[in-house]
Amino acid sequence: MLLSMSRKSVIFVDAGFLLATGGLRVTGNSLRSAFSVQYKNLVDGIQEFVSERDSRDLLRMYWYDAAKDGVFSDEHKRIGLLPGVKVRLGRMSYNGEQKGVDLKLGLDLVGVARNRSADVAYLLSGDDDLAEAVEAAQDLGMKVVLLGIENQGHRLGVTAVAEHLALQVDDIATLPQSLLDRCFAKSAPVAGVAVQAAAPADVSVSSNGAGHAPGTRPVPGPGVLPAFSPAGSEAGAAAASGAEAAGAPAGAEPADDSVSAAASPAGSPGRPVPTPGPRRVPQDLRPVPPAGMVRREPVYSTATGAPAAQSPWFDLVESAEAVAVSLADNWHGSVSQRELNELLAERPLLPPTIDRVLIKDCAAKIGEAKTDLQDIRKAIRAAFWRRLDELV
Image 1 (cartoon, rainbow, N blue to C red):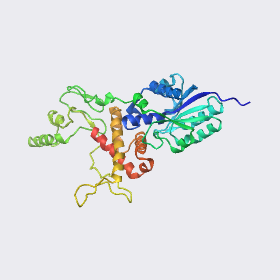
Image 2: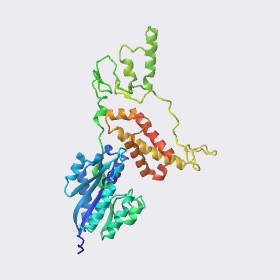
Image 3: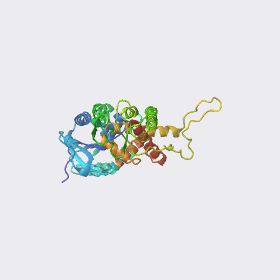
Image 4: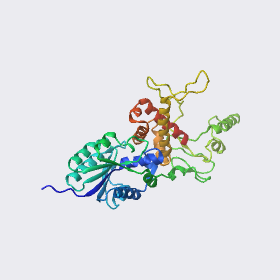
């Protein structure tokens, strides 16, 4: 005997999609450590939106995310304890990719439809891979409504939703952007990065965690060199020449820390700055435009001498590099000194997790096809390192 379909609604949330969209809105990138989320307000806001649109009772909200080895984090536990929310976890690969999340969501969507537990499903995702699961649920009698984030500038009216998925659903409902503005916020800088700059004048802290007494030089850790700035170069040269004139070896250290303090960045006397090693001569890493596109340098008019309009390639590279600069800013403000040292030690390679976010966010801004150009990828990676050099 065929059971009748329950007049209930159910919500399926692709957390990776939702959090990336909110992060891009408030910080300019989807790096999770760069923003904080008020999960209770976010869950309540989604449920209230659905209840105002649909008079059916809510069966539950399914929350899909990934975690290392599929084990609940403290964040996932807090979400799972919210009323009416069931957390389902996939795995996180070594480079930050989600594994098994879409499969779990698709199977649950079809399973609820097959068991006739609800007759309307609200799907908050933009992934094209869910289109087949949507069709299967519809064949079983379920109506599927896509929940998207409002975007009047997009032809679909929503943010980052695959067109194929949008064509398969029965309807599209748009969550207001104000919901993200209320629930997402930029993370405060990690205190550990600022500890060295705020250390008392009589005890300095080196990057390897050891303190040193007044009048002694800090002992840098592996791959860490003392800070140097162009402003202090003349003082350093004068001290070196004075030492040679007095008969001291050219490489001898000064009797006090005055030269070291003059050569250090303003406001952080004696603070060592981690570097990957000896400074290299910078190479010209500007990307070469593909055939048929104008180079990124501005073209000057022979009639007036004024610069002509910037080429499409120039605008493309500028947009891509802006993504990298934003990511560098937010990453630097959300990590500890140890994590910063580890990143610099691997230069010029970027960790897979950072590189993946960089490429994904760039694709969200300029499109996947343009981000696939190797010259664009080289440009955004180079822009990330340039910005990080400025920050450290």
